[in-house]
Image (cartoon, rainbow, N blue to C red; front, side):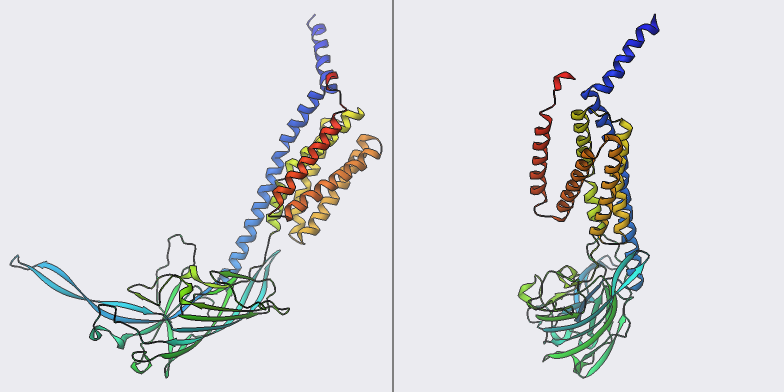
Amino acid sequence: MDNQSSNPNTNRIVHWLKNSITARMFIIGILSLILLIPLFMVQDLIRERAERQENVVTEINVKWGDAVILYGPVLRVPYRSFREKQITNSQKEVITESIEEIEYFYFFPDKLKIESNINPEIKKRGIYKTSVYKSKTSISGSFSAPDFSNEDISKENILWDKARIIFNTSNLKGVNEQINIEIGNSEYTFNTRYQQKNTLPSAHQNLYLMESEVLNPIDLPIDKAISFNMRVSVNGSSEISFVPIGKTTEAEIKSDWKTNSFTGSFLPFNENKLTEEGFDAKWKILDINRPFPQSFRDNLPELSEYAFGVNFMIPVDEYQKSERATKYGFLVIGLTFLVFFLIQTLSRIPIHPFQYLMIGLGLVMFYTLLISISEHSSFLKAYLIAGISVILLISLYSKSILNGWKFPVFIGVSLLALYSFIYVIIQLESYALLVGSISLFLILGGVMYVSRKIDWNNY
């Protein structure tokens, strides 16, 4: 009796699963959610490859020389300062003692002229590449006589006999020639001063201090302006920039690099900076254009945030575009399943859930093909190859399911339109949301128009 009573119930359930639109929609929804798992795995793969690319580029840059920031030259003049300290002597009397300390004044140049020639090249490791360069920079200008009139420092406490020129750079490893400075009638050599590496989190690179030998009195701007000239030859990667410390800073950077990006707080003023051979960019920055003075007392501040220069990084956006494409993966799977569902419902051609699963996995394969091919070619070529491959795969597979060419051709055209739409969305930035919203609205309208012919009351 139990077997006889259970068989009709089982048959009714099987019949409902095969013929009910509600059951079909439920199964398709479950399959769509299951396919999110491989889609998320593809997104993790893209992030992993992007991190690998970043690590390789960082390793190459570290060995060759990091991005370069040049900050100087700066005139450092020590002076004596005195502070009072109360001490208790052996007779338990409180007396005041004057303690002498050495402090420093830092003066920026009155005029600063920078002329830099950059020779970039490509370094590769496997499928990854980055840009490195050799640079030769000429820095000239003049220091005017320092003004101590507004400071509480007497002339006899100024230690002109211990004055030096200091120079800062973010990349000591890349320096390939001795750095000297010609100031007044003499030439002085810079020596690196040991500094403990800054371990605090910072948006800017560490700057390393180099200081010259003690300047001769005749080479100091005590009563008149003194001119200087120096040359810096340094290897670097990704970027080179300069801090505009002159009261008037003029700079010119030349290179045959085609894909450049001017960075920093100031942009070139010349309109003809980009040429067929590369670029020739010029800057002119006045002290009124930047938020810091021409001299500092006690400590020299870190001013890298006000630097200007050129970025030589190779634009690598394949991973970013691939990741954006995968964000539309659920939309592609959902709309494709919707097309098959409407065809199945209107034509009453049976489609097994396993066949839906195979179609969904084919759609997911598009993204693995996209990321793997784009690593060896352009994103457009990778997108075309992956898209055409998946469209042909699903169209031919649907031919065996739907018995004829009418529906497979329609599915192929629908996928072509869908992938074309997603490619356009990926390329757009400002209008991506607008175009996407309008297109989805039209798709929804089309689905509503087609589904009106379905008699939902019979299921």
